[in-house]
Structures are given as structure tokens and as C-alpha cells.
Image (cartoon, rainbow, N blue to C red):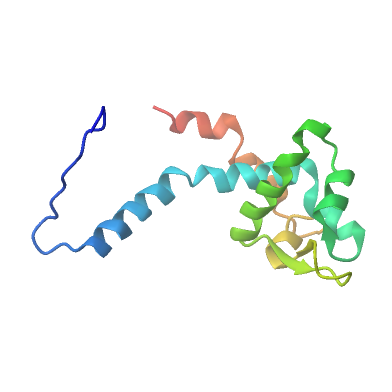
Length: 140
């Protein structure tokens, strides 16, 4: 084995592989949990909920990218951002009626609470809670 060290790992008595994988998944979820918050912050700062809402119907990725205030070199990253936001429960994907090829995005209840004109909007609170002024003290 040229340069590759093989690790042997023995389970603790009474522990099975499923429990070990579940424990690892739990830790990985906590390690990368900041991705959800930062993705949501990015969506708010770009105005994605308002852009989709103002569009008035499901909005395709290509139309969303055109509407976003971003440099064209950043546009390939919007798909990944939207995938995270869908997985996190902020938007729903819908197939477009024109030959169902391109996915479109619609608002759902959590994303409606992020609209600027919604009197129940929690956007100011969200932005305050993830502001570096409040998050930096947590870094040791």
C-alpha cells in the first residue's frame, strides 16, 4: 500500500455500525450547521424571497439569476444556494409547465416570514442574531 495507511477500528462492545454512523452524522450536522444560517443570510441580503414573491409565479433558476444583484461570475453558485435553502425548508421546488425541464422556486410559509413588506417579518431579528457583533464572542 504505497503511502496509504490502513486504519483498523473496533467498535465499543454493544455498539453497532449503524449507531456509529448515526453519531458521526450528528456531529457532522453540528459542524456544518453554520452553512444553513449563512445561506439564509445570503438569501436575505440578495433579496431572494422578495424577488420570487414579486415575480408572482414560480421562478426558474435562470430568471432568478438574471434578477439577482450579483456579478455574473457568482451566478454558478446560486443553484447550490437554492439547493441548501430548499433542503432547509425555505423554498419549494416546482417543475415548470413548459416541458417540465427546468425547476422553479416558490415561497412557502417560512420564506413568507422573510419578506420585507410582511408586518410579521423576522428578517431584522435574523440579521441581528447572525451579525458578527453577536457571533464573534462565541469564537474562543
